[in-house]
Length: 212
Image 1 (tube, rainbow, N blue to C red):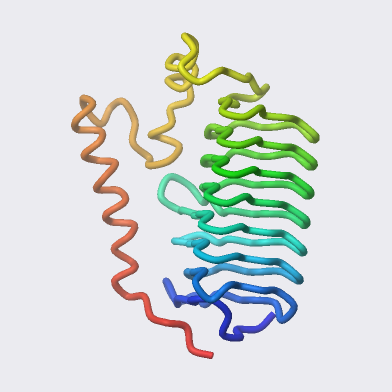
Image 2: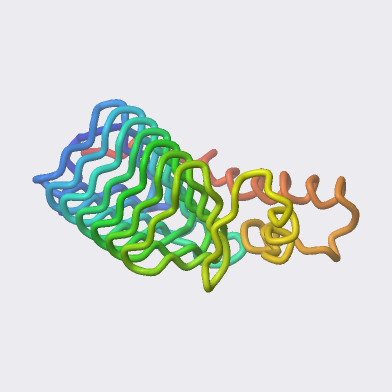
């Protein structure tokens, strides 16, 4: 691995992004902190890979398309973003603290949330949402605009009557932010959620461009 000047590379929490010499990172892609780009990987224009207090790993021949967002975290737990080899991440996709196994295909505007696991050869079609802690088996298919939730996974239509209860059982705020029901009423919880991210992102005040 080396630190050749590809993309916008930011030293964060003392870590510098590492880019394999055979990889391509577009000039307007941004790598922040402990980000490791593997052989022949491609990170395209406008993509943002932000390791925060954890790490991001992009495997061999994995493609991260335009304006995708990959963000790790260490707030509620260590939640890296780990993409195995030959993964395709479509434009405007969002991956937060999740694991994606080899040859998975995440289409345009797909979303995979904290501590979810996407199996090998799985497809998340356009605008599909894989919710927190959900486990998708190998070669599974999430249809367009569909919510995948749970382990074992269930597929729910957006706006369906079971969606609020299914999401409520996840305890999403606790998974993503470490904020639970004991943190007060709805307003108090959302205030706490904002404060959690304010404190986490405060580390960026010390960010510096990575030197060659």
